[in-house]
Length: 212
Image (cartoon, rainbow, N blue to C red; front, side, top):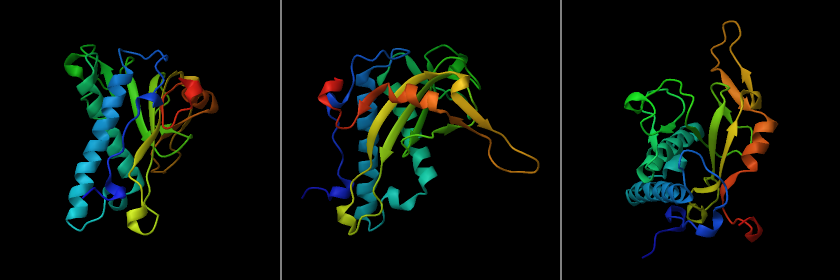
């Protein structure tokens, strides 16, 4: 019997990738495609087990920010598996998430000037980070359905776009703490940075043929 729709593993179509886009640090369309498929496979295995046990999917169990963090972590761990040029930055809290293989001792750096920062988000814009830093940023925009009723009508989580662009500090705004505030300092990508990212979609679900 086939899996219910809401835990079905999505397929990844090769025609949804833009292959004429120059990518940094030896990153390739094939590497990105393999990472997408691994994330889908991981979610499918986990959710199938949860549903079989009579429990809710991760999408219904986790808070939105926590789920985005999980997706980001899965991406960061998956990409280096299929790349001979990129490594995961193993420094806790280190920046960026992916660094050139062998660039930094032990593939660990607190604040490196080479690499790619990875962010997973349901948002189509207004992306944020902790600091306004120049460098390559990769946005993995995804959609999840945790509202439709009955449950069987919900769709599995799926990536909508993968965007990658080199941003400058001027493409960010910064909101620090004031006074006794415990607010986490955040940096937001401005319109200039958003336009750079949107113009460099390496993957887009259902990409128009004219974009190929």
